[in-house]
Amino acid sequence: MGLVVSHDRAAALVRADRAAGRTVALANGCFDLLHVGHVRYLRGAAAEADRLLVAVNGDRSVAALKGSGRPVQAAAERAEILAALEMVDYVVIFEEATVAGLLERLRPDVHCKGTDYTAETVPEREVVRAYGGRTAIVGDPKDHSTRDLLSRIAGARPE
Image (cartoon, rainbow, N blue to C red; front, side, top):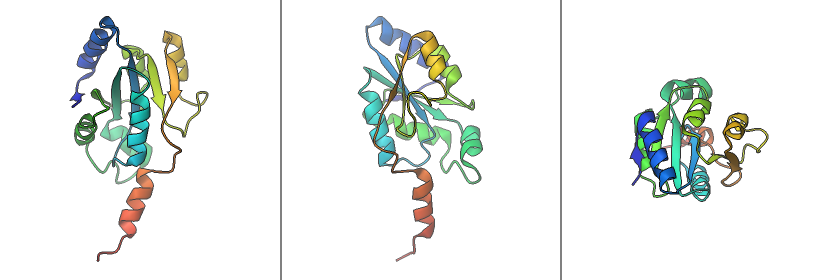
C-alpha cells in the first residue's frame, strides 16, 4: 500500500530511492472519480520506473479546471484511494495550477502523462527537459472520463 505524504516527505523519499539506485516516475491528475482509464494510466506510469509518485490536484485547482460541482471527492479522500492501489508508492496533493513546481523540486526521472497529450504538448515538458528528465505518454486511448461518468450517473433512472 502506498503512502500519502507531504511535499517534504516526498522529497526525502525520492532522495532515498535515488540513493538506493531506484528510478521514480511522477504521474499527476485530478482523479475525481477513479475509473478504468485512470487505472490504465497509472499502470503505464508505474511501468516507466521503479517507484510511482502520484501528484493529485487539490480541491481549488480541480474546481478551477473542471468547474462547478467539482471535485466530487475531497483531495484527501482521492489521495487515500490512489494510495490503496498496488502500483502506487507515494501520493502528494498539490494546490498550484500546474505540477511544474513539484517537478522542479522532486525531479523525477520520468513525468508521465495520458494519451490526450503528445510529448510536444505536455505543458511541463520544458521543466522536465531542463533538469534532464524525460516525458512518457502512457495509458490507453482517452476513451474514459470522469465528466462522462458523472453524466451517465446523472441520467441514470432508479430501478
